[in-house]
Image 1 (tube, one colour):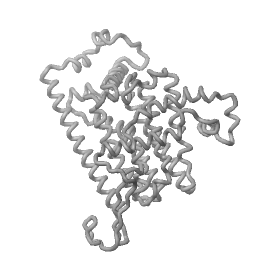
Image 2 (image 1 turned 135 degrees about the vertical axis):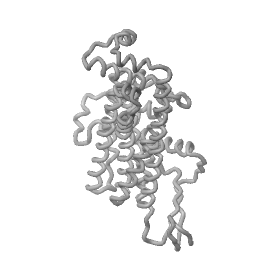
Image 3 (image 1 turned 90 degrees about the vertical axis):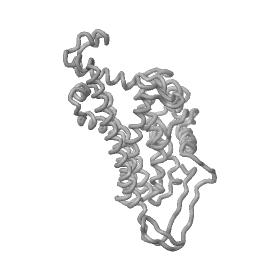
Length: 387
């Protein structure tokens, strides 16, 4: 065939690769298919009725089989596995699992050799959701009751934390050499560290920064803090998962960096949209709207005013006893409130434009690095069910 690829003339033999034979017309349909495969992979990795050998591999190993003495498989399944599976089986967006395997393929690898990885990002993510819901006192997640509502906080906290570590055996593969395995382990723990650091910022809240931002109109510090939270909580883990896939696919240093930066931009954009939906509401009431974030920021404002050890009085009493500066911030005149809202909207729009530009730049960089080919051959890939 003859044609152009990224503005460059190409000629030579070409072929089309197709994975699967199911027609998928929309992005929602595509990720529904991805989600189905993710749930299947998770069910295999985390069976609700594990055999002795399966349970041993989850909580110990063949070498440490004596750790299983006295363990009740049914009890372990009920208090460790079932709380995680209940959340997984309701279905999620699954784009993180797609990112890991897609990046393996896009650098020239074969993601079919790492199909067990589909469960890994999902378990990491679901663990964080379970813990986040306890911290937020949320009651709805993925269209059903949150884990701590069903099982209580102690079981939820333990199961959510365990989900981070139940992924370890999924990373084992004879397809990887020692250097690749070490790099993948480093990236996994980099994702975990970043995610928890971002959650720490979120738990601290933005409340202490709001009075000054509203009073002065200078939102630079507030915006930087919000972006740091989003970057660490969502963008960094997504980028690390993408890099893991590219490492497994044998990508070059430049390719690994390109796909990582691209999915960091995707993760940042996703978190911004998710926060907007948190205020506007989710299709199908998939999770609780608004309350968790509002409560979190209210408590942060309380801590900033009263100090970390001050007793918490009822909110109405605290409001009446507030310092004059805070009272002025909370009781702005109508004109100043409208001006503050206009400034907030300008910041929001500027941030959205900046992130859109970064996403486009990341896409262009990924294409320029990943798409480079020395041989005059065009590979047209249609990916459907692989993930």
